[in-house]
Image (tube, rainbow, N blue to C red; front, side, top):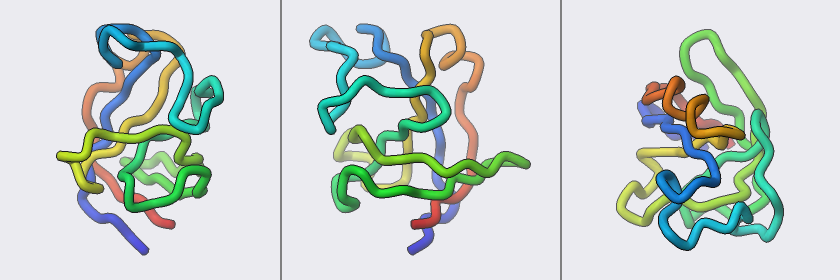
Length: 98
């Protein structure tokens, strides 16, 4: 399954990115890891490995968290360890392959 023309955004575990209930724990119950954790749609099981591509970057990541329902696979969130790194990442377009 390929999700084309998706938007990648970035998040960290802070209250700005995750809201007032931010706990630093993903939907799988583990601490997220930079370069490994991605938040994906609810239609794909937690723990699924995906290949993300944006620009020249290709990475295998694991769905350990969830995006907002309204994005429905059109937006995926990549975890960064701090807010500044997440902000620098910004928004990028690419593909996700399962």
